[in-house]
Amino acid sequence: MRLLFLGDVVGRPGRRALAAFLPRLMARESIQFVIANGENASGGKGIDPRSAEELYESGVDVVTTGNHVWQNRDIIPYMRETDRLLRPLNFARDVPGLGWTVQTARRSDVRVGVLNLIGRVFMPPAECPFRAGAEAVEELRRHSSVIVVDMHAEATSEKVGMGRFLDGKVSAVFGSHTHVQTADDVATGTVIVQGGIVDVDEATGRASAIRRVRERVEV
Image 1 (cartoon, rainbow, N blue to C red):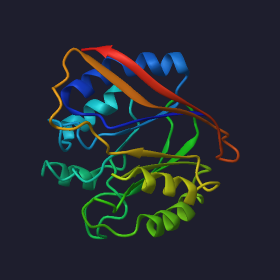
Image 2: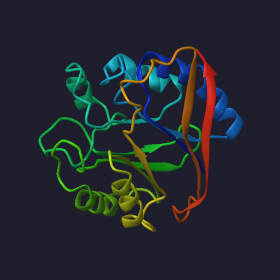
Image 3: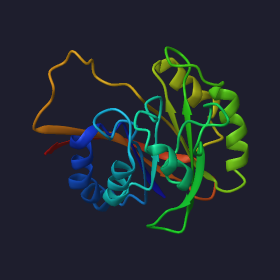
Image 4: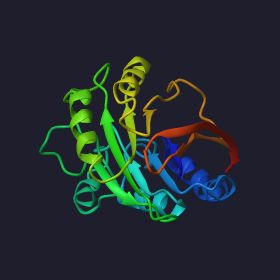
């Protein structure tokens, strides 16, 4: 099957870009399942229920998040009711929401496991993502051979480390979180949609090919 990961979706321009471009990309590339990090989809910081629903309507199957997930408090009751919006698994155990999910692709009958982790380098306190990730992957492998991980982290080395740690156990590890400097001029007119397309062997869960996505969209 063919998967697409996008991140981070930032504010209204990001949501509009996905609504305008994602259906075309999915048709052109025969994408069967879409994961997007949406922790900044509402006003550029945080996510609210309406923004999550917009992402689903654009074609996103599962939304992952990170350290800004609780910026909008109305996401808390919504998080308790959905299994398509994740928060990092290695947050404190009692926080609302799920850290992983298994969903059936709407465009095929393949079950896809999605795991959301957050790093600890230059980030707020969290449990060890490597320990949490290893335990979760063992459980996920009971439900699906196709497993995708969003490692939401500041340090590139920590993201690469997670990729090496889970090599051979999951289909793909993507890194999210990194943003442009806030001192930069605010971009107008053109939004750049970035992500990666992965071909996964449905029998083994191994990634067989990966390509970058970088498309300019006028909004």
